[in-house]
Image (tube, rainbow, N blue to C red; front, top):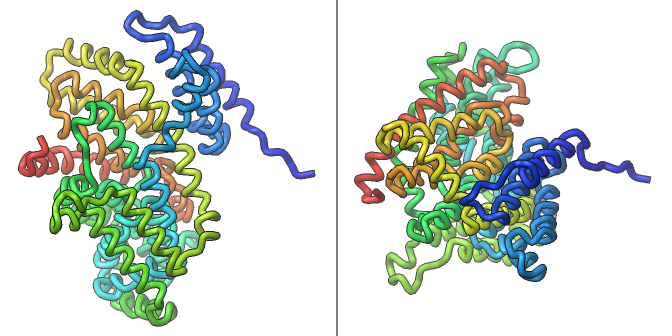
Length: 490
């Protein structure tokens, strides 16, 4: 008989206790509907279960959907209405955009195109250690629009390349030689990942969730398109990408600063990959087509009637990869990460949406706004307080998605209530939701992969993460804010 793998008992009991206390023992505020409060109990319990890893996040989400349908907190008049509400997240096109995009990104690893891109860039710019660092950053940036899993991009594609280069210079974690070049490249490898994740809606899984939350909170008054997001991120992202390797270079200067053999090593790796295959050529063509559709080129040329929905574009891209045989349906079925993402995104988006519809987010935001108003400060400083709390509370989260789902709507609504411009507030919170990944060794899925390779100590990792995150916040808040003003976004 197979060994059973039930939920973790102690975290589960804590989650149940938290949910029951909110549901039964904490008095419901006068301005809050009882259904909204009970949904909050389920929502907080779901987030606590994700943080406590009671079960895998997908399993927790299935239970959450079941409880919402069973309790009828979104639709007390009908059990049929409750299950329709509980499953409503699956009809959200942004959730399918991410799920399908993850399936599309299979082709990068399967064809070897991701590694080929990385090694090719290093062969051009890798004569200095700084050049290798910028090559890794450049490769990440190229891959970011088409790899919605920042873990797959930073940990699955770029990190093996970084380790190969480090090993070629005899800088290894296990023999105490990581200070030669490995420590520096590992820190760059990780701290670039949050920046590229902030650059595109399709660069990390929670970004479409953020777009959805902003749209819901402003009653569809502030829709952020793929191209709007990318343009808004462009200037602050380029500055962050330039400065981050330099900052880490100052903090932990590698012993090896000149790497004349790195380009030859990269060329050898490319030779081992062989000539560019038909599958890689097809993949490049499909990715270019996807970018053209996501950017909105058809509508620019032929008019708004030819606007292609980003999710429709993703389905077209996946269809072409299947038709050409670059990936098989079996590959898609085996991609547990994609299907898992669709499940848990649907549950979390559904719960967050109904917390807004039932008025709880508005009540919370007005409460926080009143506290900030009582401090007698203007909207900018109030927004700054909200931003710093939002970002550095990530020390208490092991999941960006859990953090965003738990706090984004409330903090966005609170900022609106104190008079912050909707787009300025929405953009800085959106981009900070990726930038905050850098602060810990458990802040996102990429972190344990790179930290676990052993090139840095915990102290080095946390020190670098805090300094880089703080500088990035300054860049995106002030330079980004001016850029968005020039664009007319606020």
